[in-house]
Length: 497
Image 1 (cartoon, one colour):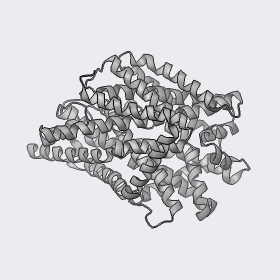
Image 2 (cartoon, helix red, strand yellow):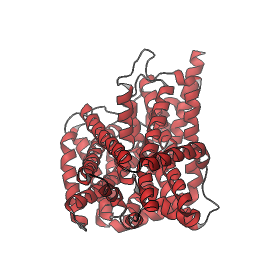
Image 3 (cartoon, one colour):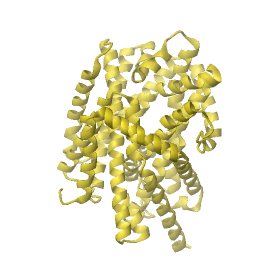
Image 4 (cartoon, helix red, strand yellow):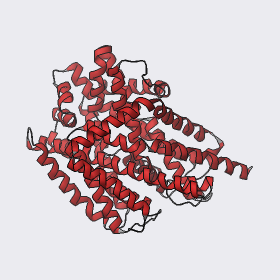
């Protein structure tokens, strides 16, 4: 392990960040917030331009003649059924964030917009913005990154590494090897820090769920640390065995629980209001998503600019942080599918589910704010982690539904950590499809330490800043990967003309 420079450097960087955060959590959070603010102020246009470019490229490729090309040999057939494929890729891409932000995000946007647009206008705009954060642009980032890995891996026989397309397209020389090595390193750091943030969010939500189940008011950091310890015990054994379809089963189980919860809320709640909100939000989003992707709010006041940085820009780099991890997973389950089928499946279906998910839970929250006397907006202001459980407590069988959220969140975190440790082990050992147990355990420990840092921050804003800081450098790598893909596709077209 010590003979691998990439692994050593990656462990040193991520370990140092984890150690800094444990010793001085507030200091790390403050530095991250300051650096991210500077970067977001100067590069907002570049980030939004990049993600919009990725969406446009995805659409063009899906509609072009290249869409007929298979990810693999021409005779290869898909390994998984379409339904199983779609379920697995969605669970890998979003996970615990769906549960955490289901109602909290739309209502958070509602609170800000209400001051300018009034309650009715704020409701529509809040759902639009939430759909934008979780919709086409997010999945285009995942789709194009995973398409690069799948195309070069299955079609051209390259290792499943971020560096492989760069070396394949531009040739193996000192410069390309150096750029490739740095790209692999940036991908590793982005994945590790992004996954640490998801661990923290999941622990925050599970803690609120346990509080609700036990009737606790302020359990404090102690309960969060206990949950974190149980989580570490749960994900350690799977790291000691081969990655199997058992992870997919657990992930699909979590998705089934989440889907059942959504249907329950839809049927048990004000169904006509919810479906009206879902339909209107979907129409407004689909008609305005492309234009909104080019908005940088340059001419707006400081409050709007801060909101744009802390939400939209943070989300875009968050998806970039997860892109190499999710990309490897989606690529592995997509062999034998055409580029057109791949892009449509990875972008359109998860986007449709996200719009339905946030439409249901967001509309329920907005109904509570507009039509009832429930203090739901106060809960959003004071305890964003507990919003989902506050909503469920209003519905029948709260004990069952809260337990379901806790179980799904726990499963999402365990499967994410195990899968991420595997991918990190693979990236840091030259693309080894079966990284050594000690490598996976080492990454599991690092991921746990990074999650602990963000839990100790006790602030979702600090978590978002640290994730953004880790992901920002990877923006440049993603653009380079897209260029590699386009050049390779052009060469394939010339070969087949």
